[in-house]
Image: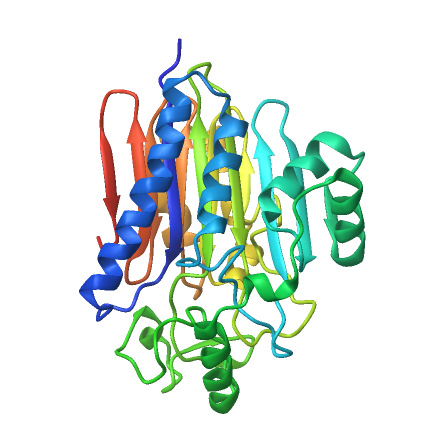
Length: 328
């Protein structure tokens, strides 16, 4: 029997002056969702079932930007995306542009299991959701008062926000490393605050099979139709015999670097260990982008890495190790 292991994240890039009570709230959410995965793995659940269950929990809590509490487009609507990958056979499913599906990760699972395709988007994804009978709600379910307020501020600042819960004009974050005086630049637009915008989970089960899943509402004040890294297999999500990976951060940089797949490639082609592969990819493959990732190996190891200020994360292994953290 292999050793099971699990890692989760709630986004990379955290305001160093995030209030203590918000830090503690984040840790409580992470600990609760991590325990869902641990209990399932102790009960012998398969990796792909565990990542779906954990990400559903994260999507259902408005603290992080996925499912309920998702960021708003410039039109004030929600367009969510998610992906899931089963390392056994490298099966995968993904969705983008869904606006009524309560748990996008479960729709991605159905694309993988119940359709001849790997990726459905917008009207096609919504139609498939209704065919499959998944829970759907009005778009207003996903919209919170905080979202509406932060969208207004984002429009006034003519910027895209990674985290719409921290007021504009906050303290410096890792984005301040960029030359733009207003912060990090992404596709020519200043990002006032670089902070969490994605949730994810990576698991290896007691049979040695891996899986990963990622879900997000995307960027505050994004153009309608924008697709980030989270639903893109090989960029935001990847799983194979060697490892499972879920990424978070500047989506365009993650897409360019095919970050999740690169971790596996470094392990497969260079013979690197899990943490070594993670460190190499975060340091060498992101160019000027900012991101983070979580990973597990087929041997039951856990690893994470990020090149910015903090990443909401948690991990646990079969030997009793369990950790929830934010900073280095």
